[in-house]
Amino acid sequence: MEQAQFIDQITSGIESLEQELSPERVQKCAQLLCELDRWGARMNLTAIREPVEMVSSHVLDSLAMRPLISGKTLIDIGTGAGFPGLPIAISEPGLAVELLDSNARKIAFVQHMIGELAISNATAVRSRAENYAPGKRFDTVIARALAPLPQLLGIAGDLVGEEGVMLAQKGRYPAEELKDIPDAWTYKVTDLAVPGLEARHVIALKRRNPDA
Image 1 (spheres, rainbow, N blue to C red):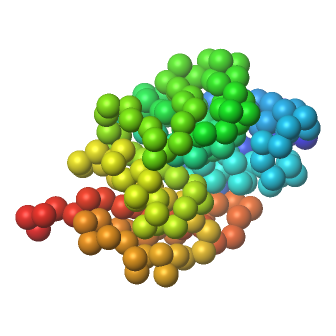
Image 2: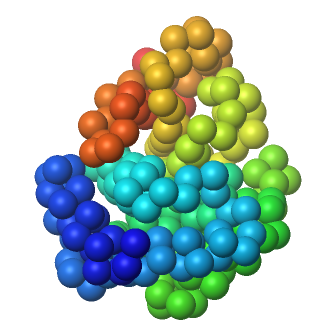
């Protein structure tokens, strides 16, 4: 798919999400997909290669998270080829975004795109989440289909600020995982309607107030 076609698909999808995005930022999202398609022809960055599915699964699924983000700092755990972190960083220039993954090839692509698209509010970090010690916590921690919820909290719970939130993107409603969430955390489940995708859920996890 040519960049102009990606632009049309993304613009239509953003309207369906009832969001706004400037033409310049739509173009950056389209350019991101073009580069992902080009790189993907040489190396295995993502299993999703069909252009329309790339728009839905990468860009729109990422942007659907925007209303749930809080604060001024965000880290995307297990970002892979940069999703959802890169579209979020493009769409929210006032948000400081870190993109974390242990895969050198994928982080190389993320670093390339940060430079190519001049995304000044994004930083790529190569590390396993459980080994990452940035010396700070984040207002929002995002993870897309990375691990079961209890395991995810074990891996990255320490990165969530005291008043922060972890947003775990899932497909089907994760009933069994929710049963095993530690008592120290509360959760809220939100259904997402993403154009071109079926069931999508986001579990927002926050630390329980011990005085509540």
